[in-house]
Image 1 (cartoon, rainbow over the protein chains, first blue to last red):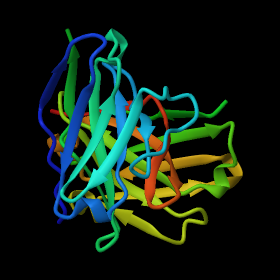
Image 2: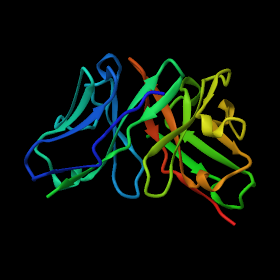
Image 3: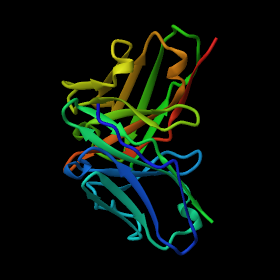
Image 4: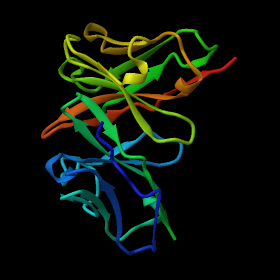
Length: 108
Length: 120
């Protein structure tokens, strides 16, 4: 089955740019989606189809996907961005959903 | 405003059964694939099951096949998850989600979740 690999944690200073990676075999050929989950809250979709943002998501959130790595970039990081972030793909060969293990973003 | 409200969680003994419900509002429920996603305490997200708009297609993660059944009632804008032969490893918050699709499936809307605890 398809596996997505994320770093367990990423730290960023306020105002700087955070990059959260999601690794997978030829992931660049797939559409990757990203979710933000704050403590004791449900996940929220922040980027879909590699680069698109749902309405209401700040432009500071962007995505890219090339080769074996997809990346969620959060520009001008704020304390309110502290959360767990998950990448996700649809594995069409098995009709199964795959999530990455999640990355805890700390803004300090 | 889109709302997904789960209910039916609780404490159940190993081997027992539970039925989760999800009441949807604020969007055309019958037009969306729907899904259940779970999260064990302190762990990541795990997809559980999907169901097509008319209920004609259903997909499950291997660990719940044969034990869980996803269903829906479009007239009531409701999604269900019948869980049988529950195990300790099924302990999790269960989220109801409406799927979006453009280039591929993603979880567009989420409920707040309902906690299922399997323990003796």
